[in-house]
Amino acid sequence: QVTLKESGPALVKPTQTLTLTCTFSGFSLSSDGMRVSWIRQPPGKALEWLARIDWDDDHFYSTSLRTRLTISKDTSRNQVVLTMTDMGPLDTATYYCARTGAAGGAYYFDFWGQGTLVTVSS
Amino acid sequence: SSELTQDPAVSVALGQTVRITCQGDSLRSYYPSWYQQKPGQAPVLVFYGKNYRPSGIPDRFSGSTSGSTASLTITGAQAEDEADYYCNSRDSFTNHHVVFGGGTKLTVL
Image 1 (cartoon, rainbow over the protein chains, first blue to last red):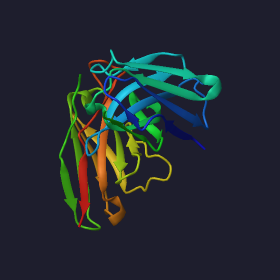
Image 2 (cartoon, chains in turn yellow, cyan):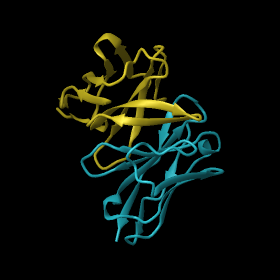
Image 3 (cartoon, rainbow over the protein chains, first blue to last red):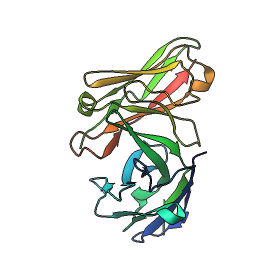
Image 4 (spheres, each protein chain N blue to C red):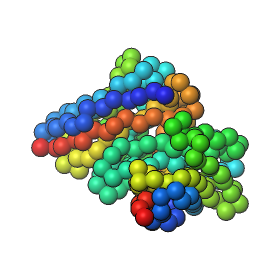
């Protein structure tokens, strides 16, 4: 079955760089049509899409955060890594990785990790 | 980028039908996806595309789109359906990006 799990620091200081790893199983990111996205959710607020990487190494970033984000994949280890630079208090959120599919022109997130809460505080 | 608007809160009597809506220009071009999120849990995909329901999702969940408005309908709402619901679609400006709605808190009375 498909599973994803996020890992990374629970606490980062302002201006630091956050590195999160998504380790997944049940599918291969080298297979046609496979994609993995990162999504975050500040406490009590809505979901926000951050970035996506595709099987062919195409990658896409949220327009508002593109200068701070880098997404990469290690197909052999079944991992996707997201880095976010210059962290600030507004980046405090639960960060999710999710397998991403496409059907009829729609993108959807069919499997999610449990999420990891990242708090930005000095 | 595109925006998706949802009503912040909706309520429904147990066993009745409720429609949760999502509005945005991107819905004229792309079908939405819908997610259910219960407190402390990750979102769960409940409906996507023109007419797809993931395995394990009860058939009381259905979706439709008309113009710039998409709807998730729960026919015969159950107590366990009380949750936050989010829509998302592709961004019609940037094509490969994704936008989420602000979420709707569903209360089952």
